[in-house]
Length: 276
Image (tube, rainbow, N blue to C red; front, top):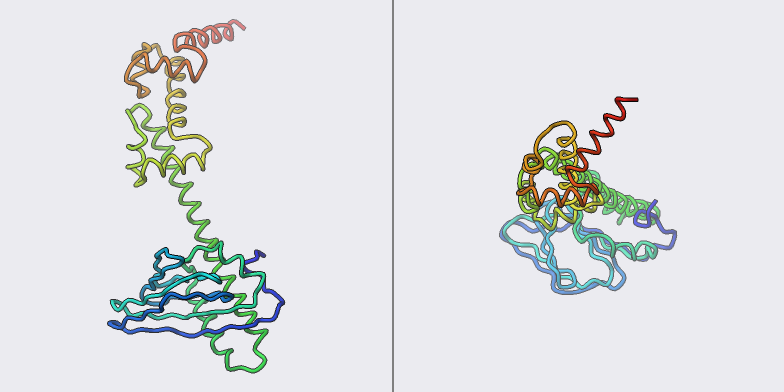
């Protein structure tokens, strides 16, 4: 179990949970402030809560949790353009948990909103019950676990989507290596900018998009040189190079032989194999 979901055995010094609501046309604002020891979580069920955390703006839409770590300067605004509703939870005393909240993003979309809302409702009811500390501890732990799970699910989905996109890009380059492709062309086709493409492709595959494109072209060139009698200039054109000179330089760098040397070497090897 991660630190973010462990339940500390230290006494729970303080907690409060309450619903918040503002009707359409009613604007609410909380001025700049901070809580030195208290974690604050806002579960947004309707509308969008606007927040400034340490001078940076963010928005928590319906279906998300706004996370405010201890000691964070913040101000909240509930715009009048929409009806706003949700729950606010503040607590302190989980001394092992507090440092981990600084690692959480400020806004976390929730994958199981119905269950999380039910936990907030139940926690609010416990305020009026005698000897509720253990139940409160348990419920807050479940709330944190569910938020942490939503965060991990989102990361896993993002990773899957990223890897799927890179597979599509690799397929596209394999099928279109004969065209005069640029990084910008490829990125635009997949709704990325060239910097995003270069960074993500390198992270997923370990090589740059240009290196992969060159490898596709060299694979095709080797096949054409061995399996056909196409002139080198035509092989260059068929693998996306503007000139035979450019192709030969790239081939020599990648393979260690000129196209002509490679063709002769492969055909010689085939003849030797036939004699055997």
